[in-house]
Length: 471
Image (cartoon, rainbow, N blue to C red; front, top):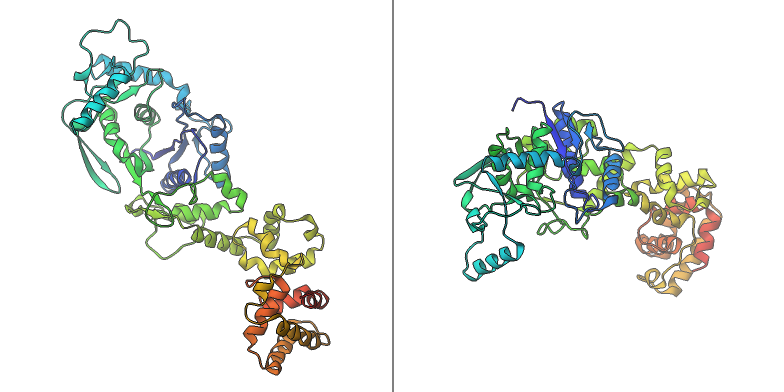
């Protein structure tokens, strides 16, 4: 296709934008930028019963935070473009005009059959164990006195429709199994199937990139393009995203939540985009961390996968940690984690930076920083069961007494502390791992913490001895 690349992300504000929607927006954005094209944001708000007013603002805020800014379309203010308005409820005249053209050509009709009758016909088909496909022949034969309040259906002709997916290849649908589907509802609003075809044509959309849940509808769209005498776009259906078990589609429980919840938890937008880009696409190498510029330069529709992608939040956390460690300066990291920390922790910035240097490798999300760092700011409550997991309390108390004697006289720096404690373990004839486990839990209340000798030195001699002697 030689037309300029124009793609659109067209969410429905029937709820908040979730992570799966961001993946669709990202693939559209990357394809547009990789081909010097245009990325358009359009809102499909014709489902008035499910419309959520605050959903519009959330969609825009989510895309803004993640860094997917449209070249044209809906934004805080309408972005310049020759094809607006970009909200479907403001485009009803277009749908009305094209529906009338289909009616005039005998390709669509006002449907007189009431919903109750359709339900009766469906029940009859179920009882007879045959598929239910609504056709014009089921309509009442008498002409209606008025078409007001009647939906408009497409009169699906005999034959077949073939269409091509740029990733999955050729598809074919027999019209015998396609309903005379509604294109304009009784309330005058278009259905998704009709509105998106009209809008994509009028907005010169060259490629429709969307989730694979729309594959079953694409034959209807292709048919509409042909009957309306529009040029078809290229279709690309992205692989579904599965939950961590790799068996069922990603759910809210597994991470398909309001995108701004990821912001609240302390994920970097660059890490989210990097992670999502690899859900259904790769560049053919083993590279895992990409800058936004690298993603644009390397993105190719031919590398989109057919098979489902698995959403692994542990992998996302790892990637976010990579960005925290390698992309942020200490000053930038402090600014990111400050909102999650008690203000008092930041009063002694030299001490705070020392602690951060120890814990930076372990922070994968900003909201984890408080838990990870608090062992250096708050006296821990030591679980006696955890402390005594390997040795009884009397043995531990005797060890602590010897530890106090060993470290009180030494210069409190890493090598001296390590030397003193290793010599003590040998003197006590106890494996160093057992002794160090006890000391780590005694100082922090945890089994997972930075290196033991770093903990001693960072806490300082007085605080270290105070914590051990309180066991």
